[in-house]
Image (cartoon, rainbow, N blue to C red; front, side):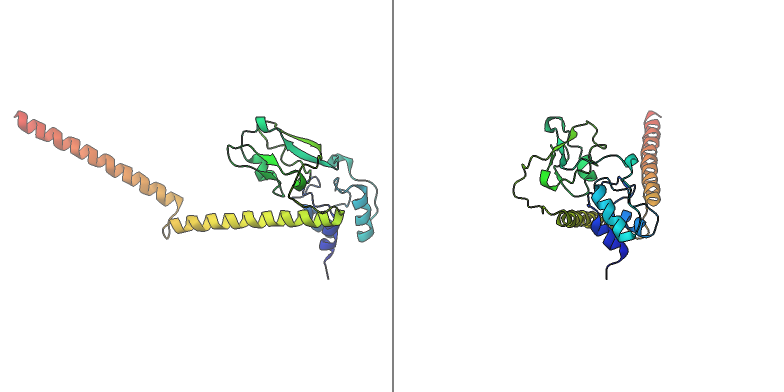
Length: 220
């Protein structure tokens, strides 16, 4: 049987926009289930989600907290490509991998995969990202139309991305450990490097002194 957190999470739109004050929809669902958050903190879900949460939890439904900002359905992020510098900050911010590109290369948003969360806008250093109405230009990507199926779809993409990032972090850490000797650490490497430099300087000074002594012998 599903937990209350899982049932609450199933009602949320899975935009992962963080407007609720939590890092993702699951964290917000857990906060509601434990009584640490109100049910009116999901602008993307709107009044419909608020009423569904009220029915599930037995709490009263008023209106979505206006202090959390609005959310316009049917809008997606759009990158003004000539202005893009390829910094990858938007790619790192997108919770559902809707942006493609590479470092120092132009990026673009896959419209059908964008949840409209707007998380890619603040980190852009050149303000080349703006929100615009859905144009339906994506081809080759099928996204469910039903609201609940769409939520499941984007929840899956979000968790797949998190798993990939966690795996990549683990691999990097393992690679670094393989490159280090047992007991090796940053301070040891710095000390070793300083010792090597000091030894090299000492060798140069010794050669200079030896040459100076040989020169004196020749002069005498």
